[in-house]
Length: 181
Ligand code: HEC
Figure 1 (cartoon, rainbow, N blue to C red):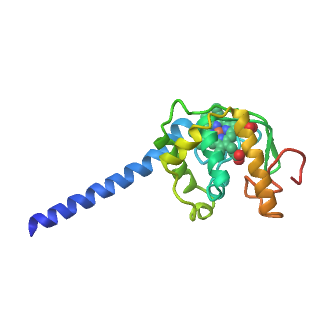
Figure 2: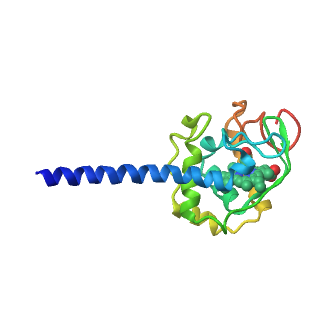
Figure 3: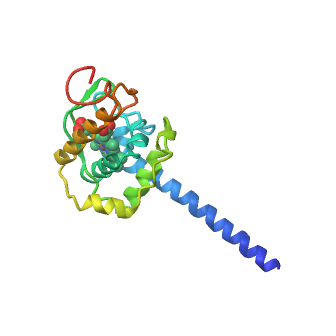
């Protein structure tokens, strides 16, 4: 009897520690690989580094959005874009060499639960290493990832005309071209 309890408690302990370690990993990966540019709170630097504190939850509920996010982390991104009326034309390096499929999945899962409106990503399934592996096989260039972003924006604009200005995909907030797109 007593032994049974002991085992139960030990198992609980392991479960708890395991869960905490997993959550911490995503955060640690973010701090190491992303925060220098996108900032600790994901707010970015207007005009230089786009914010991440809104788009990730929303994009995670679209297959094209998930592919774009995984591709951006793996291959980088280069091309002119507008976020909430602020233009960006920088280049992000890819991390395909530094991060395993599992690490990319852990990082994206942590990101979609962070910051503003985590509820946007609440219905989105977790990223899996298998999903990341598929994207890795696309072997894109940063410009190629930018093309994915343009295709994604066309989808989002078509789906949500007049939608919010939360970030990626909002007609007022994103896209090539002038204000109002
Ligand atoms: C050296 C600076 C730098 C680092 C490090 C960096 N990024 Fe970026 N990131 C950028 C820049 C610059 C852009 C915009 C590129 C452009 O203008 O085409 C960007 C764009 C993005 C976008 C697209 C945003 C949108 O709204 O479409 C995502 C998502 C993103 N980064 C995620 C990450 C993640 C996750 C990490 C960590 C693995 C990371 N970035 C690391 C500089 C960086």
